[in-house]
Length: 145
Image (cartoon, rainbow, N blue to C red):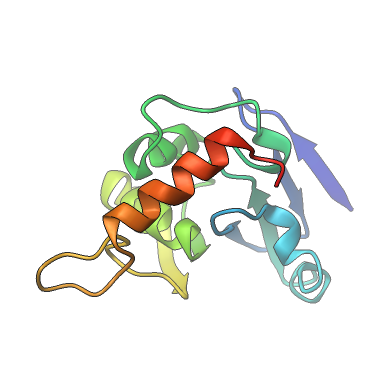
């Protein structure tokens, strides 16, 4: 049975019993990305999904400035103690920041298709800063497109 929580500002969804496993989705997605396999986990784990601020059920909650640090700060109080935190893509970046911010809350950390740094630098491959800026501008002009 799934339960919906609105602890503080953020909406979270939890189902199952056992060791706590928390899932954070990637950029441009929502926690629905995990829906297909949660039933396979919830017999043995207490699974919580959290829509990142600005996405899905938490679309109206947008911290300022909007960055990995403020996303992590928005989520940290929603984490159960000694959880295994699973982050995909942007969710992985947030999960890494949460591991640094509150290591006592985590029993484990799993990142999927994530990177410790999103933007390219002189010695780091990644997305070019000007390309990311262009994406941001396009979203601001017409987020529905």
